[in-house]
Length: 425
Image 1: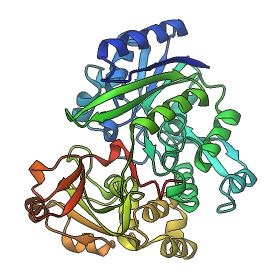
Image 2: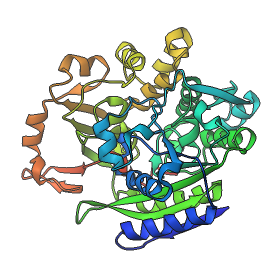
Image 3: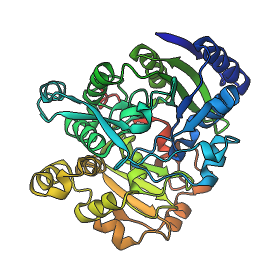
């Protein structure tokens, strides 16, 4: 049932409009005595979920007893990050999701179903795992808050991904990522329906339909004239229909179709948001369908300090590197450490160009040239690249350099999906 849909064509929804709409919906839901909010973590700072979570607190007050950021495999947020993102919500309301230890398996999606939707690429059953806090029967409302945006693993982020991955368990996250990777990233990105989504829908229908979950979903787009993020849509509901409407808007606002394949693309990773290749490789995922064969993708990563945020995954990335699907699938068949961390295998597949284009990482002092090259990327000095391409004057989209070279610049790869029509079919 769709409770609310509010969109805007030009400009963005104001904070007053969002608050008014949100309060109307929450009032319509009736009195709630104990509420759990599940917003995204700091890696989704630009999702508008922080202000919405703060508004939820303003509405429910002490009845919003718990706020558990959907960390997935990410590191816990610091108090400073919590304050920056969620404003005046008391720190004692926040809970840390432990994806390895604090989860329960509420059901198994049959292997026959997984095999069918993945077109035979995998045939294991899938464990529907969620943080045990969600099963506390004293909660009479669970608000899943987040942004619908193109995503490399599932097609479109958010909705029940926020539950089964955001506050899911190690095995479920790993296996869901592997389903998406083996099916093919370029067949998934930008689509509301995908094999991974089918698996999560099965789990929602069969294992968590009794939970009082309502989804608050945003769609944002960057105004390239002002450089500001604008909230284009707010969708509040409890079913796939609501998510589909948000996904349709996201496809219109977050999808950038380029008129010709990109021969050279420069992507900037904001230091506040991107400190690992685990996150920073969005620069690869989100641009690959726009890149020409033989293209050069240059990634400016001033705050890069690690490959994986999780120590185990970081070590696996260092061990195996981003060397392509065939190499990683073979390594996964032969090595238990990858078999036990299929999410890492999926990530290593996602982060490879498969030899079709070249990837050059330009880190700050946190990661060395030797480290970058050891995982299969080329390295370049970030200051040299910034000077060569007049970084401070680059604008999003096409730029013509003084020597006549044409480059395409992206200031934040998390905000869209770029493609040429020849590759998005």
